[in-house]
Length: 193
Image 1 (cartoon, rainbow, N blue to C red):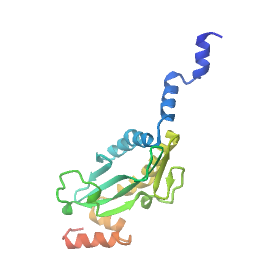
Image 2 (cartoon, rainbow, N blue to C red):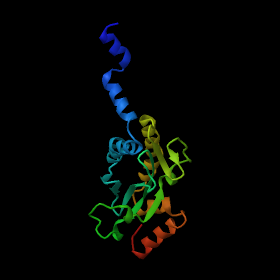
Image 3 (cartoon, rainbow, N blue to C red):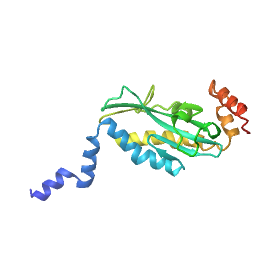
Image 4 (cartoon, helix red, strand yellow):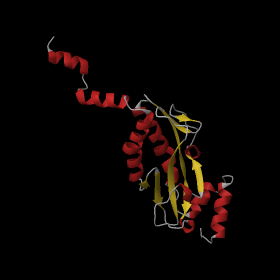
């Protein structure tokens, strides 16, 4: 067997570039997989939906309020085992000291975890009790597909319905604590719906 034939046999039909990418992905630890997902998939998806970003926080200006999405990592995370969630909600511009600057987690006046936006309890191997879990060796393609599906099918469609404060009251008004808090903030600050 010639050397060329041996190389082709080792590399298979996919070619060297594909095998190198697969090898690189299989060598990524959990934290690197998470960062890759955020950089290559989540940021572009949210940018396409009109969100700006700073660090691990994305926001979209809706006039009287911001829609804010914040990625929260947990303190117990290890390089090979990463748990995280998304804190998602709204921040009322009238109550943010400097609304011209990028809003963050501390500017959220209604905060819900991503699972509150899922149409049904979505079970997949990357969901856990606190949100999402990535382990070293995870299949990057299925990881991306699972989390993107949560955003594209459930989270973003619900957030895209929030155009006015009245829409926000319709979405959050019946949620214990957060609904009452939002109503109180709107009333006490003479915000019109």
